[in-house]
Image (cartoon, rainbow, N blue to C red; front, side):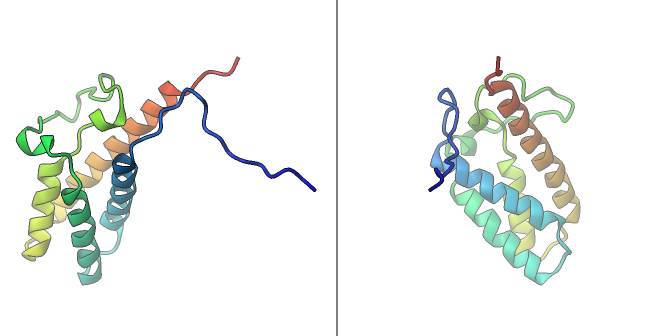
Length: 134
């Protein structure tokens, strides 16, 4: 009988909090939805997805969310994924526009760029925090 292979994480890796893992999954879903063909069905899914993100957002972002220039190297100073900025105000505006059936494609395009930068930042963090094999 063969031994089953079990994937394990490196001992020095930190597990993300369940809220952060959930947020990343929902952000990935949002990213895919924004790239789907426009229509009422997509709008319904966008509303549900945005509602899940906005309900689970950290309360501190209600008080202050800095505006970060697109050319800023904002990833370099973040020590963990929870420090990467998420555009919650923009997510709320998109949700409101969809709910009121107002035009939102320009805002959606901005969010596509924001999400791409966010996920690139996460990837860069993971690459820099991985142990180097000797």
